[in-house]
Image (cartoon, rainbow, N blue to C red; front, side, top):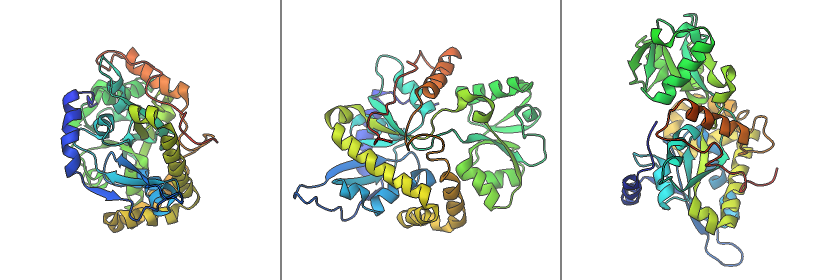
Length: 340
């Protein structure tokens, strides 16, 4: 887990902003009262993918423009979106609850807040080749797992294995160099990989690779944390609450569109990020999968369940996985979302 709360990293983000690749909202309309659109910078967590579709739909369909906003999308610096949002050079960005936890510990917490859940439930878990016994956590014993060697990662796997009667010490940990899960499994360079099913799992389906998979949240509800999330700069939220609400209302329309028309949303995403067109089958299939995940059983897109948020932070504290402790209720709010 990255430590993102370093002042030096924030300063570096300020310097890096001018070099970031950006794709802005072309032709943002001027509101009828003649005022100029309000400029908003949104920093991704990675290259464009189906987690981000609602953002690109809101740009393409003019939802932001109608709200008097001119939204520019930028790629993250090496230290991630958190430092750029904390610096104030981006008002919004994409992060993850587990990545945010270290940012809220100590005496210099990053001034960011999670303001919307992009996907309602954690869809991550372990994928493996079908029929090799890794369809449940205990089955990882004696197999090669591609690890990032992060404390939270290993503690998660150990907990679900122990609950299933397994022994984590019997897993062969292989330093992860995986960039293509399909190839890694087909080549048998590793046996098991932690993935987010909406992309890597669907990629295996599209490739015709038969797999076994278990999701952490299905085994232990403490792992049903929020990943990914939209974060915002705290000073911006305090000084411009109406603009923040307007942004999230337009963004929620984008994700609602993706729920109702996943094929059309996939086409908008690929138009905004043409490099994805080479994987069109994957994009369409991933978009169809996420159409049921963006809102799922929540009352509205973006809503956080305080109990689920705090449960995961409490687990981090109880297992001493942070340098210090984190307030279980820190770092999120539903206050800027549109009404259900």
